[in-house]
Image (cartoon, rainbow, N blue to C red; front, side):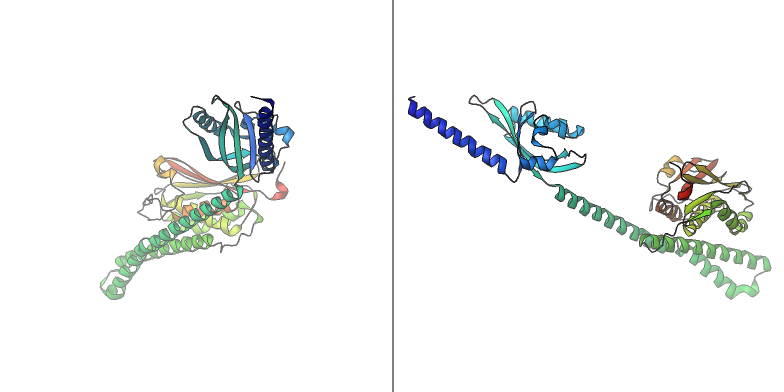
Amino acid sequence: MDTAERQRIERELRKSEEQFRGAFETSLAGMALHSMDGTYLQVNQTFCDIVGYTESALLKMNWRDLTPADDIQRIEALNEQVTVGALEKFVIEKPYIHKDGHIVWASIASAQLRDEDGSPQYVLVQIYDISDKKRAEKEIQTQRDELAKLNYQKDKFFEIIAHDLKSPFNALLGFSHILSTQAKQLDADKVAEYGALIHRAADQAFKLLEDLLDWSRLQLDRIEFNPAAFDISKVIKTNLPRYEPVAASKGIKIDGDALKELEVYADPYMVDTILRNLISNAIKFTETGGKIFIGANKKGQCVEVSVKDNGVGISPEKIEHLFTLGQKISTKGTHNESGTGLGLQLCKELVERQGGEIFVESIEGKESAFRFTLPVPPKRRTA
């Protein structure tokens, strides 16, 4: 090869390198060239902007430094497939760790540059920031999930109305019809018996309607959240008389005498609804002559309220789905009382609305304890 030809080839090579460098540096996509071991050799400003590092900082780093640990193996496997010729290149969506710690999602196209012998020398990667797309996809999925949840709740709502609300009204209509048409032929004991059955059915329907209305208002954000500081022990003691008649009918004693003054920061109406459901539930599943204990204790920045009974308990299988709407776990009470499970779902949502937690501990055939937490007033909180 003469001198003129060699100089021409060198000029073409320089021109080609300059064109590559110009396209590399001015590309609207992030561009990165790294060695086969992953060390960055050249990056453009767009890539620097995507990951938040300067060029000088990136040239001291490896692509693994910018990749979440659980994604490194996937990228290494793809690079290996390109190296052995199983893939020519690969295009994937990949997370990068930004300098400030947040995740940046990118679509990357990765290809290997080889020498005259076909041996891989470098890896060239194009990076397109798709974080906005990912956020949009997440929002759409969230909306889809919420819509599916609402549709499910709507179906369950109507199922409860169609089935569980129908039963007490059948009893009301049936026994009231007997009394209205045959009262003169019935003795006093029968009239009293039918009257008690009508009262039980009316009470069951009323409780269910209360839960249905509260739950539906909660789903529609129609229940206002008005937290205030108040003594939880006074609220419990003030409300205990409302439960004593139905508890007395089963010979059950409700013990709340040991309660001490404890301030919480919560919505009194919501707390009242939670207590109503948990105490009614405890009465329902406690045998005649049993006992229900209501307690409250300070735990860190919260007050834990407990409703414990020595009733029939709950199996581990049922506990797993106890606070999930729609699970077929409704069980008859010790006096054949019916229920829907909606009350416990309502309790869960009301407790969580106030920043608390609710959980249950139970020994099947022996006892159950429902506990929920409420925050203490801000002025009572410590660092």
